[in-house]
Amino acid sequence: MVQKTDKIWMDGRFVDWENANVHVLTHSLHYGLGVFEGIRCYETGRGPAIFRLREHVDRLFLSAHIFLMETPFSGEEISRAVIETVRVNGVKECYIRPLIYIGYGAMGLYPKDNPVQVSIAVWPWGAYLGEKGLNEGIRVKVSSFIRGHVNSNLSRGKVCGYYVGSQLAKKEAIDCGYDEALLLDTEGYVSEGSGENIFIVRNGVLKTTPLTSILEGITRDSVMEMAADEGIPVVQERFTRDEVYIADEAFFTGTAAEVTPIREIDGRTIGEGRPGRITRKLQAMFFDAVKGRNEKYGSWLTYV
Ligand code: PPE
Image (cartoon, rainbow, N blue to C red; front, side, top):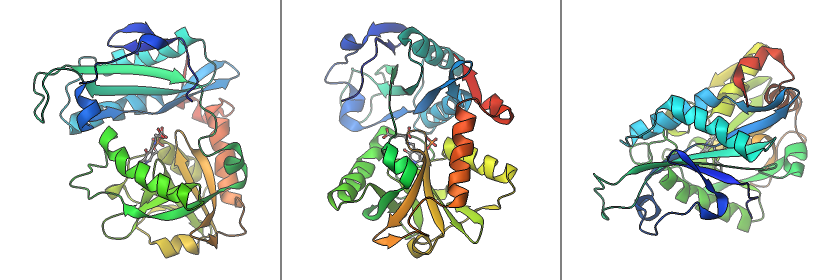
């Protein structure tokens, strides 16, 4: 169960957690058109800090733009509301979920005059793939479901409906005894996890998929920048599932998943079956950055 907090921001005002309800004919609930973000706030030596708030709010509005949703709030207003929501709930560390959705009004596929509504909820959320996964690595299965075609699942937007496929993939992976799914794209190349971007390491080179069929992950961007700062060569290039099979190291990145090592894929051990040197280095740098322990990445933090 999600861990409750006190208040949820809905369309400009705070509502008690228990009363944050919508009508059952809320358009997005039926047809899947809504856009959202996942952001984390971490405890630092100077109080709670939100990681890369500006980039997340920008992506939220770009998602809305892609899907032609006119948001009745500005990015500035949503940023302030995110900070306020963390503050009023008095949480030190939390996950933040802004959602822009189409409200109650007409039914059918042309909701021209339905209100576009916004909510922001926060709740404590531990390691997405388990503490053990974060420390020792997870086991991944290439999914029989694929990342939808780029002309139907517009992958640069973080849209609710996309996650139907992600859920099918995740359930299949777990039912088969794995922890997480890796989806291929329509041409058979690796795209991303059900809710994560993927990196592999081979011969000291860090490789991640290009932006063609994936969500433009903010954790992905952070990791690439930190790797470059460390002098680790980074390439964005398509690769196949067997390149993951023979990688020295592999890991997932995501706001929820943070930097989670992958120790096995489709029954093949990756490297020595435990988090590799570069993975551990980047994971440590990531946690130092989000927890305000590295001044160099101080501009990524918004103190609450
Ligand atoms: N790809 C997908 C499909 C995805 O959903 C996410 C985030 C990422 C990549 C990584 O993006 P970023 O968070 O900007 O590094 N997935 C969100 C939802 C997870 C959930 O289960 O809910 C997240 O991590 O917040």
